[in-house]
Image 1: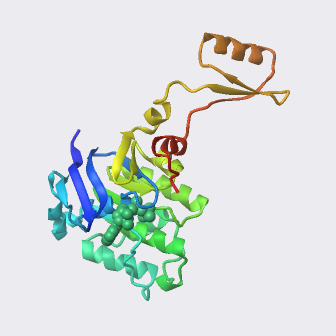
Image 2 (image 1 turned 180 degrees about the horizontal axis):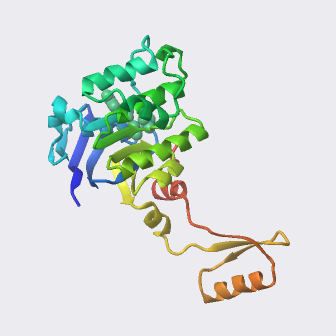
Image 3 (image 1 turned 90 degrees about the vertical axis):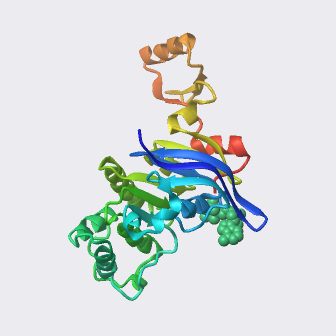
Length: 282
Ligand SMILES: Nc1ncnc2c1ncn2[C@@H]1O[C@H](COP(=O)(O)OP(=O)(O)OP(=O)(O)O)[C@@H](O)[C@H]1O
């Protein structure tokens, strides 16, 4: 499968502070990749380098098979979409006028605006000036703008950080649909549930280094097979090993009608992150 992003021995320093230390990874066409890490771990710096907003101190970065600085060329820039916290929206213009301006700039049919607004749940707000929107609504307009031209590659820096759970779920659905339609997605997040719900592979970033990079399922099961918790009708919770003896015990509970719930005690990505780095994601 074609690599859409390739990063080799990437270093980024600000003065004597190393934000990224010898980072290597690649992203295949069609993947959704999540960079998970606490504040200051280097997530935004990574996105800025991958979108040619910041130059690397050392190392090689290729996007669409070409050196990343070529993305500054407007024709290539049109292949990507970017959501970062500096929205670049025109505050005095309405939601729709902001999107129209962007559509015209990118040569995108204005008919796409409605679909983008549906994706971010902002139908009905077309005529509202951006300056009257809440922080979360502005974030959604910025996301609509980032996806309006159906980019080949979408960069999202903490896309749902200001959103409530209902809008987060709605937008996750939209991002999954966009990905199914062919957009490769690179996102950063503090939110392990977001990473788990959206991402094919997840990188744990800590102090400017990638500590782990794998599928959420492999990450959760890397420390061996998890135990199983069984809640019984008498309110007792029993922890069972995942072996033949455990299977017999569970079968017994079921036969006697004693079992209420059963679940596997896999660590969450958040638990794993704390184990790996000694730090919380927040
Ligand atoms: N322009 C800059 N000048 C100096 N230091 C910077 C600059 N940008 C980032 N840094 C430093 O680089 C490190 C990584 O920052 P970065 O913004 O990439 O982290 P992050 O993981 O995105 O954090 P957050 O989740 O808070 O956005 C931090 O120590 C930060 O202070």
